[in-house]
Image (tube, rainbow, N blue to C red; front, side, top):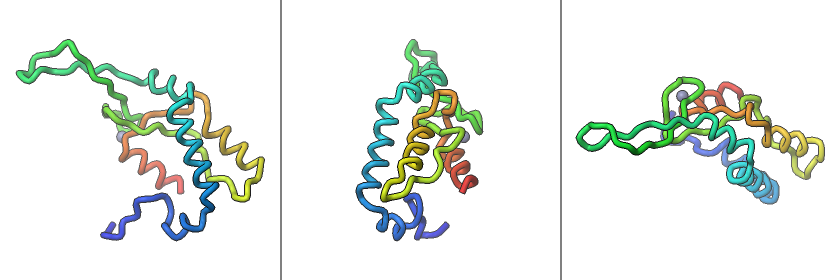
Length: 131
Ligand SMILES: [Zn+2]
């Protein structure tokens, strides 16, 4: 990895060729998934662990913070990424093909059992291995 590390998914030249309408639609779907999907919210609740906080002097406080265990490395994190165990797969084509968009949406809005919390490192690893 050098100074030219790529931050996005795919090369920037690929991104530029993706029609803006498709890009915005996928962004909107991801937003809806993130903020409104009850199945995803249920998974977040299911995995949530309450971790007691400690006071400055090291004694236990009555307050708690939320954490989630990474399903790959097992460590607890205050921030995790929600992975689709069975992957959503590649983005559908543009101009749109109904069957491809149907499958994409169906896989994206999966049941709560298909979600697992992963830390950023483990999620990146999984994403790389699946490509
Ligand atoms: Zn991990």
